[in-house]
Image (cartoon, rainbow, N blue to C red; front, top):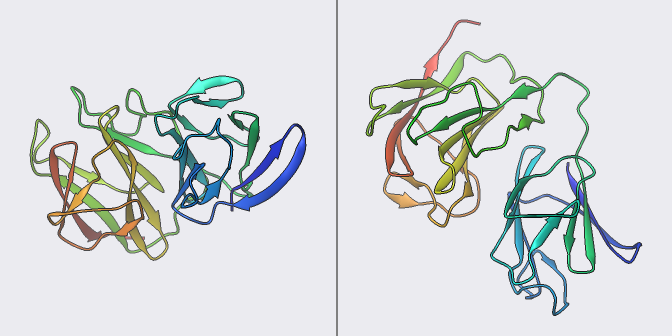
Length: 226
């Protein structure tokens, strides 16, 4: 499990595992990681954790969020990255793999559709889980609207990115017990069967209708030969 080590002026204050899908950081008490310092905004930043991958997002903080000395708005955290919030440091430690890894699949709903390659604006991410276990059922997405209506995508990767970078992005993760969709980027959350999701992962069922970045699509499962 990925974890953060909080320190200030070289002194380690706390070590925190990233157990939730979405972890918020800020000065206000309701944050998962509260840093009671005036240099920290009330809701400063958030980390979305998918399997062992973590996406950092600055929540329009006053003083900004830095990673390894560089200002960021959105950043895919790598092992040993140091997130800087004022005088505080959060070192990100990823769980190391012992087996092979799969690259993610990105599907952009912009001018071009990219499959099996990261969409423009979406950093490449290596799924931290080993190759998805062999199963007799694989998830599928059929695009119902937009330029690519009728296109069917096989969700064979551990992590599939869907959406329009800079507008709305979600990820579908393939887990041993099913497929889950999680919001990653944008102020508008994905809609499933007419209901807007929250920040937590949502399990997909056959014939769920998903809407991301104005594009509707249907999730269904298909039996494949092992």
